[in-house]
Image 1 (cartoon, rainbow, N blue to C red):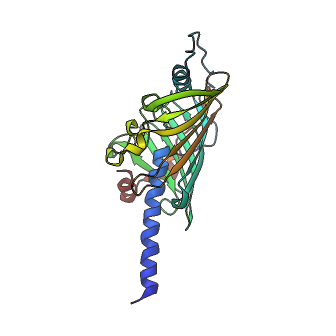
Image 2 (cartoon, one colour):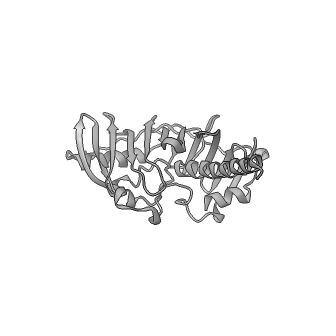
Length: 265
């Protein structure tokens, strides 16, 4: 038996899985950070005269609603233990249905960098080992839905929009601090086939600033089947400031390969 050839095949298969995982994770966080200036004027963070609920669940839901209504910057860290860790940062502009995200996936074997830009209805990706220095343009008509790309109904990659539907319990643990549990089976991004009782009471922690915006969300998802336990931390800032999210230069764009489409299905 040629152990060298077998080892090579094993590494190749592993890399293929890592590549697929990279795309799926990035899609699930939804993607890409942008540089350069935007033609949009800065958004003023909206103010509201509406009274904020005083009960913990109502106050937290109000903070989530206020946060997802404005543009913002964010950082994300998803720690899946031995499977790997993904870090990233980006910006969201809900008015334009635009998201930009830079991501780095670290596994025991390698590092994969992913940059993506979503300006509905166009998605552009750069993935280590798949697209080189060029952008891959994904035709959204060939993708089942935004859910397939890991985007919630507002185009937000952070999962905030679906959070109110998932809340089981919320308590106020301090000034601007909340803890509680989520029913993740109600998250539209989680396939029904993976739903389990363990996902019906997932602990979370959140922080809300004095202006009423969610600034941090930590979710500790238990292991389910072959999926490892994952701690996801999202931080939000720059509320109401339109991010610089622009389409890449057309000269640097090519159509996405079948490999990318396959990973996104």
